[in-house]
Amino acid sequence: MKSKSARLVRRNHARYHQGRDDLNIVPMIDMMVILVFFLIFTAVFSKTNILQLNLPASSDAAALNLPKGLKLEVIIRPNDLVINDRNSGPLKVLANSAAGYDLGGLSEFMRRVKSQFPQMTDATILPSPATSYDTLVQVMDVVRVYEIPVAPFSKAELFPDISIGDAPI
Image 1: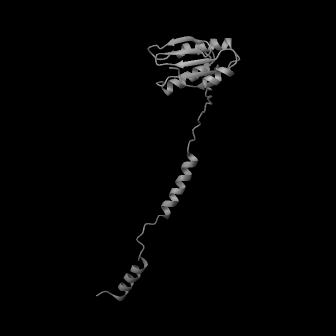
Image 2: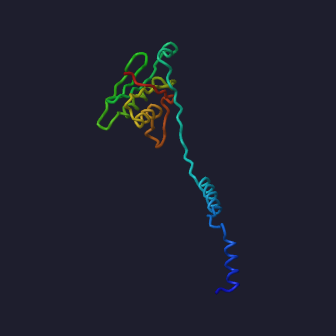
Image 3: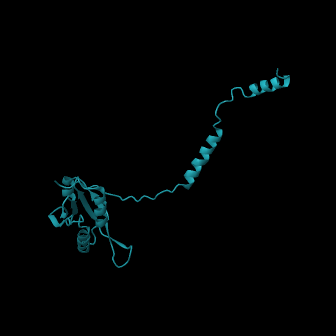
């Protein structure tokens, strides 16, 4: 037989703990709030550079409103790069080498064009459908700026106003 005090303790214990078998999630919510603030304040926000591109007007409208002079186009084909004047036709064709597109030759030709037309700032790049994004960005960089070999990390502007379209078939 159990003592009266043991029964009383057991009865009070049963009443006190009755319905308290749930999980206490308040400490977990507190930790989540602290972690969210910690992650927000310690996050590294990456700086993204955005290049403004101008899409060319339709060929019918452009032919009527174009000023006289050179309208520079760079056509990216699977086997070569074609530097073209929209009004007169191809100016130079740079065939691919074993390493890929001749970006050095393109840069040199762009510098010669810029020296003859220093006021001109626009150029159009016309990639073929099979052109990779990386190739398009590399050609855009070569047309926009060139690195000055004398001073490291120095660049000069060529044709910063880039338009993109589809290569003619």
